[in-house]
Image (cartoon, rainbow, N blue to C red; front, top):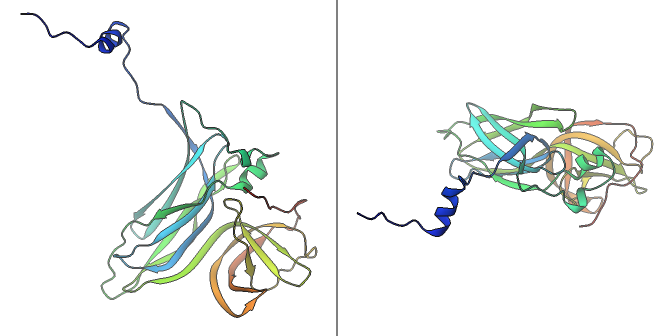
Length: 241
């Protein structure tokens, strides 16, 4: 009985001992630099997270989210396949600090379904890996999110940002996320001497509607926690695509 002939490409593969292997992916730690989320969701409308982050230049940042008990855990990893991953043109800048400031791309990530509250409010702690890709990253509790019978779309935020004041007495917040990014009027004065300089800050708070408008804006950032590095930056962190 004659055997069934192999196709030509298969013969060549077998003769050479060549078996295709899956693409090897190198994975390194990555950091979340900015996070926005709704105050309360329902099991039927779980909502989304808005995430920005960064890893080493040449690695694509991949985010994930999961629920464990009463914790919502955000993860961030830098992935690079065997075919390589080029640094985005707007990330190739002088110094690692500027690379971190560019913070990668904004990502909208659906929240997983949460436990049904059955008439009560269930509170979840939101944790995310914060820090610097080159100096250490660790999970931080950045806030909380509730599972209720009705949603609350008030947006909460946490992460790194830049703050500065202008000649009119307004203070502005610029998140460390994809450029160009939104600029928000910041409620309350910031006790900094060089008002029109830019300062790096860690901030946590909510976006609120304001009437009358604040500095011409109908939505402003209200900080619950604000830690500012009092050393001014030598440049304004603004760029176009």
